[in-house]
Image (tube, rainbow, N blue to C red; front, side, top):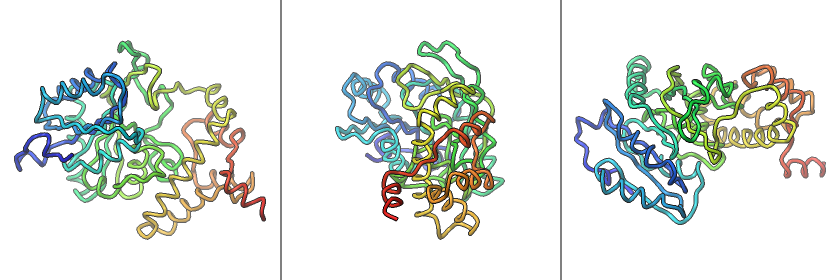
Length: 336
């Protein structure tokens, strides 16, 4: 699939065109509403590049209908081989050709001024920082249930997310960005592509790249209705002491840290030659946490500020979570 499938775009319009990347899989319940809210965006030019990941419900029929209704704005590619959510978005990202890219889930609702608001902030930052600077702009979200009944007015507050935590040491361990609420410029896309297999999620990888090589900007206004319906790939989880400690004691913290270390290793492998010595030391140390003792691991996290937002999370991280080795590392240590 090429962007040409969405219709020809005049050169004068190309400067403000936004590619909206839509990854679908068995999303028939809310897909039409989501796409209609994207097509209703005010004050911007956009095209939807969609890839279906082998749906077995009515998703492809919905996509077919909408593609026929909006042939110049929607181009669909269907595959029987599943890539999963991160792989699906990574594939779409490689197809994007516009100056700006937004990621679209299959079950939310975008407010009509979402892209216009993010684009205005993006273009202001590009004027200030230069168009060659990788920039990521993202917003807060309203948390709603499956019928759009409000759950919480701020996803950031609901989930205990601090959008100002954008230093690489902070982004290594906690992603402050929600994929469906971000806008990325061309400079960031070119630096971040291709998204590697080691990436935890596409939005976390982009945030990590932007934190090191560019700029992350948060727009406090919620611009997305973030629908929670029980089948979300990631979803919103209420922040609280009991939930955080229970989650980390159950082993989720250990599994998540292993994935984060793997992502950091992929980042270091690709960008080591472009990093400052202090950045290399930080990221390499994070990937090699398993080589330190119990105390050494905690001291490294504290010394470098590799901490989570909120006291409860950090107490659970430092005193409850098992910052465990992967199985190959465990085997290698036994051999020595």
